Amino acid sequence: MRLLALWLARFRALAAVVTTLLFAAIFLIFIYAIFMRYVMQHPVAWADELNIILLLWVMFIAGAFVLRDKEHVAFDIAWLAAPPAGRRTMGIVAALGFGGLFLAALPATWSYVTFLWRERTTVLEWRLDLVYSCYLVFFIAVILRFGASLLGLLGRRWREKVEE
Amino acid sequence: MSFAFGILLAVFVVGSVLRVPLAIAMLSAGMAYLFASGQDVGLAADQVMNSMYGSYVMLAIPMFILAANVMNAGTISERLWSAADVVVGRMRGGLGQVTVLVSTIFSSMSGSAITDAAGPGLVAIKMMRSVGNYRPGFAVAITAAAATIAPIIPPSIPMVLYALLTGTSVSAMFLGGVVPGLMMALALMATIAILARSEGLPVGKRMTMAQAWQAIRRGLLPLTLPVVLLGGIWSGVFTPTEAAAVAAFYAMILAGVVYRSLGWRGLFAVFAESMRQSAVVMILIAGAFVVNYAVTAEQLAQVLVSWIQAQNLSALQFMLLANLLFLLLGCILDTGVLLLVVLPVLMPAVRLLEIDPVHFGVVAIVNFMIGLITPPYGLLLFVLSSLASVPLREIMGQIWKFLIPLLLVLLLLVLFPQLVLWLPRLAGYGG
Image 1 (cartoon, chains in turn orange, green):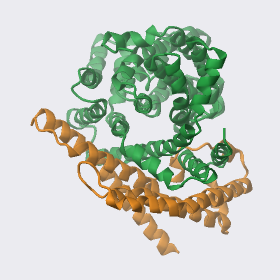
Image 2 (cartoon, each protein chain N blue to C red):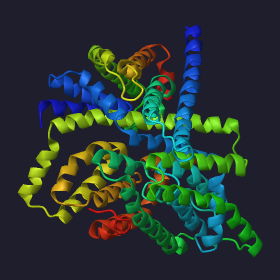
Image 3 (tube, each protein chain N blue to C red):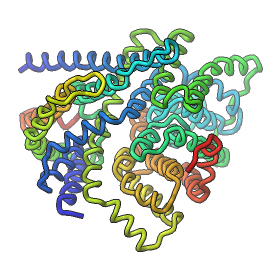
């Protein structure tokens, strides 16, 4: 269990570095495209498309592995007012209800994305199912994270989980 | 409204109360709607991915976040502070005036109220409390109110989103925000001047000419950034999206090469932080796209349009009503939800009544920014309360003093469309 936590922490740190580098790449591609257009008089057609694909990957991979739950915008007035046991119940209901909903929607989401294998992006002509697969990664991560939060809240050390 | 849409609302409300991230709550609500109406749930993925993939303008958002973070990391806020101190610092309540002035200048480089609060805002609170002995709640209230100017004076992330959702010109929106933003700044400065005596605010310290010149000189170079940024957009040299990247680049040169206050390690940290903030915003937008699909499918906007026709509402009556609605919703809803979900429902009515979309957009965004500082749900108050470690209760006791002038500005903007439209029309915007 401790080994798993260690590997998970390492994986998250790695994901944070990778998404940060991809984010920096978006910035550099912008600068490169402006440079090519005005200085070299030779616009690059692929810059816009590559940037939006990179942004999709950055946001969904970061959303899946890098962002902590409390970094997201959430309405926490009820949570802050609730006693520890109340928070535990709220967390369990949220994990069951919303994790369950995502789980139920997984098959249709999966088949939507994988069905795009024959379509390609306009300029780079990359396979659309691969480009969009970051959404599947995010989707599955949401389910796993609700699952992990459920296990934590049902476990013996639930008090630590609601103090965060 | 159908049964399925009722399910959508229920899922969203329950999720919000349970502290499920708003983005996840919106995605869930949209998928629950598709389940309940017997449609393919894969449509949610379709809405998210195709809408995001097709919105190139959206790339401006991460780049504006990056630009503001570079400026915050590169001591540019401090430099602006000392320059502004020379101009208005000596008045009674001078530090409060400086806070508003710095926020206003920073607004012309940053497009988000939260980065304005977290950057120059925190500097301001520190100075007001340590140097000026301001009460903590009062200092934070001034800062929070001043930060609402950031997305009104261009560049502006909410305006990019509005332009994206409604097909309005980003440049026209940006120009439309200039006069309203300056009005907000003047209103806040006047309020501080009026309150200075009753609040017992101290008079600022005197400076020698040499000190004053030194401070102005230190702040001069950052002031060229808005010129490059806005000049580039209005002259058509770069698109608003590219301008955002150019602004970040310019700030990096200033901070890294000219001032040498930002090294490689610092730069990586800035990229990492900007990446996280961008991901949070973008995922929120993704969630909103799914809810918007349901809102469109339910034809809520058409229902509203026929109601307006039946009531025979005039454009002005509609504007007043819409603003009252925004103010009420702004007390309890997140700005992102208002902008991304509630606003599109009203757009067909705006077109029907022949209200200029730039006027409506600027007024709505001013309104939403006021929503950021209205209790009980005011994101700016939460952020500043936690960053400055001042209890929310103390801030909420003071914030109303600054809500009044901002609401007056809002009313003026509703009544006199020319205040918004004068500058865009001068630059050749039709409409």
